Length: 151
Image (cartoon, rainbow, N blue to C red; front, side, top):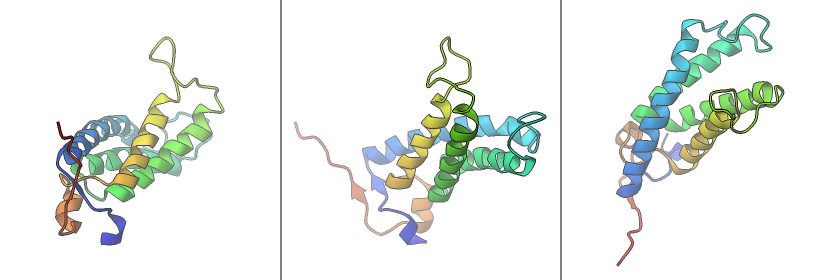
């Protein structure tokens, strides 16, 4: 499994990745939890997305968010969230003509899906950082320290 994980960043970068995972993962869990309550029907009657795919999206949002918070199986969680957010963008938001940012705030928009998609890409490419269960379970012996500014 070590080939899945880039070297785990240490130092300030690890703290930054931890905060990113904690906040984005918690928010993703909050998006997924109500959907899990009605896993195969949360999109409502007549939805273009079949019930089993709705359930997969609900589990991905909640479970993927939990994995981000813990820093556990981060590449898998990030890939699944990336796929879910790309699907939401292409199958729901773009066909319905949602703007990038809803004005006034609160309406449907591309912003949340593309924001989570961007975070998923970043975590896939950078990894979860040293402050993660992935680092504890699959960590390499070397740390990658972030460059420090000299002053």
